[in-house]
Image (tube, rainbow, N blue to C red; front, side, top):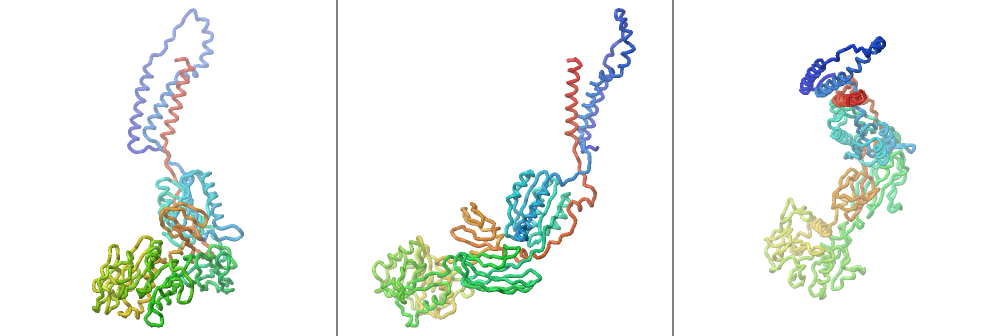
Length: 624
């Protein structure tokens, strides 16, 4: 037994209280024996009484011993005694890290690696338990819970479809344990695809008397999986890899709404090699699948998400016939794979140049380009204004008599007349529309342009001699753009950048999104306004979400896909093969772990019990 620090000195001083206690007992008066004649008849009993003299002396001095022991225990308790004994630190606090990455779904015979991991986790529980799922980002599902509660939580866990990050999970376990003694158990197949090295962190924890045990539940599983998916707006390509040492035969099939759209037929994939299949990108939600499936099904399927409509419906309103040879705009728009173009010649806006009947105000965007003033019917631009208010997009182009066209409040510039000065046209604002001209900001010249002044809330993208020639403004519901380059007075229409510019402007106007924003890798984090989000397995309310399941998510009014597409995570044909000793053995190899057990509470409890015994003894003896 030892004593702790300065308090031991105080406790030793407390032992001095025993001195006056012993002196008081020594000075107390002793009873004097007297012979009383009337009691002489009791002398015969004297010999028998001496037989019990020892017991009588003991009972008469028992109170002294009790009080002496109480003072001794209390004095020692003040000195903070402790004893250093062998101690199993693994039984007090246990942190179980369960690998919940995609590779843990691998398995055969109806039992996955994750199922075996849960069995191992149940065996590792003891004392107070913390459960951590090792995904791309570690997730704590239980902290400092009982064994019964931990078993209940384990029964509800499922593997995710993310990469493996055991290092960050181990660091999280270290923070949760803090200075408390305990054991950390990592149950995994040890196909580590990202994060810090767990061996380095394990060494640090062992130095802090933390036990870190590795439990390897890996096994060889045959696998051919989808490891890469390139989703384009019009064509896509999928890559499948054979991870086995033998060739495998697979069919790659594109499906939508359960119906096949395209198939690669049966292809042979050589050992450790990759094959690909290219197909037209369907609109909406579809899947690409491998068949037959194997023991790791999560990479046998990939989801594809695109907008419900891949092309933008554009209506070109013009009196310029294509045979005039000057309608380069029509040629540029028809050449764009992003645009479904319809052309009408006013005053009739409901029949296209091909004879198709349409509703002009059901189009995504309307372009007025070189329109004769006399061909515009009264009220046309009032209807156009209603169309814009309802969310439509409008682009109107400059022409020499534009000042005679009644655009109303759709006009973005105030016209001042026609400038016949040869002018450079230069970019004023760099954005997705003008980024193609960033290196050469003055991208063309014009012999004529309309002198003008931008109205309020109008953003000028490009100008000529200070006059706006490309301008934009958001209006209630929709938006409007002004194209002030008169193509017949400029060489811009003949430049390679001309169709690129128009494609960029139209995409900007209608808010066309990059197809990549519809397709994520699992493990990504999506942020949005707080709302109800539909995941592949449930509906949750959130403003930030870890996409850790493979499948389709719905938020912000659209559907997006999340896929594994991780070659390292799909390499389940390789065993983890960890043969290093357990953390317990590593710790014991440096000597038997010992722990200081504080005896203050024990001594105080015994002293309290003795005080109670003293009170009972005094009561029984009749002193009170």
